[in-house]
Length: 59
Length: 266
Ligand SMILES: [Cu+2]
Image (tube, rainbow over all chains, first blue to last red; front, side, top):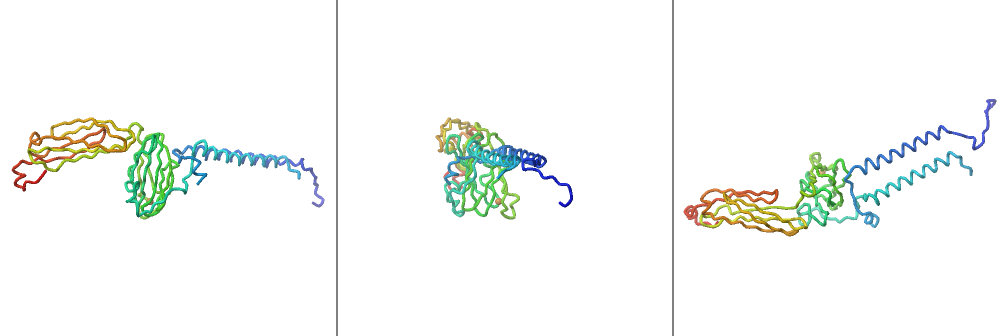
């Protein structure tokens, strides 16, 4: 880095809180989208094909 | 290896998400009973459908208490039967196959979605909670008339649904002096016996008879009118059972006319 001023920090001093908050936002969006697609769009779209799970597993 | 605090956080978060996905899918299949249409179903040759006990006459039949089976044949460019009449709040198992090419079996707005494949029988069990009408469309391109291929599913209120069928007939002509016989057949496709009343009318004469038709069987009822009382001429007749009605007409011909025509039998 030549003559530029640089500072060395330790492992735990590194604090990328911006990246963390972005990822938190991703997680929340993912969770909401999952709940919406599964419980509202899929399960709410009745009637749904029902049956015993046993033949599916045995089949 | 030292892992940064934040990295630990999103590794754990990702694990929770994956476990959450698995938990909801498991809840769906175990808790709600949602299933997929499997590949373990029976097979049937498309050119033998007419000889098949079920698909030879596509229909809805009762197979148990609150359980019905619907046998559906898709072919260019219709579904049979049409409409498919089923009761609400009962388990309906559709058995769907194709007579010719690959068709689709899709009820828009629901998760009822299957392929109708020649040679295979798709089996899917559903339950409609509300009475009403649902369109049924073919969503696999099957030929020039594909866009017109549709059917209808009529979900009837549970207490109004029946599998009763009425047919009736009389001879076309009866010689005056002989009896006019009206034969009615009441079919009960349900498992419980059907107690009902048959009302009949021949000309201006009325008849009534209470009958009990056992489950999955038919009962014949015969009404007899004297042709001399009816008089020579055309007489309309009607048979009614519950909401079903059959009509027709019978002609009483005078002795002389019958003799002139060669004394034909009634
Ligand atoms: Cu089609």
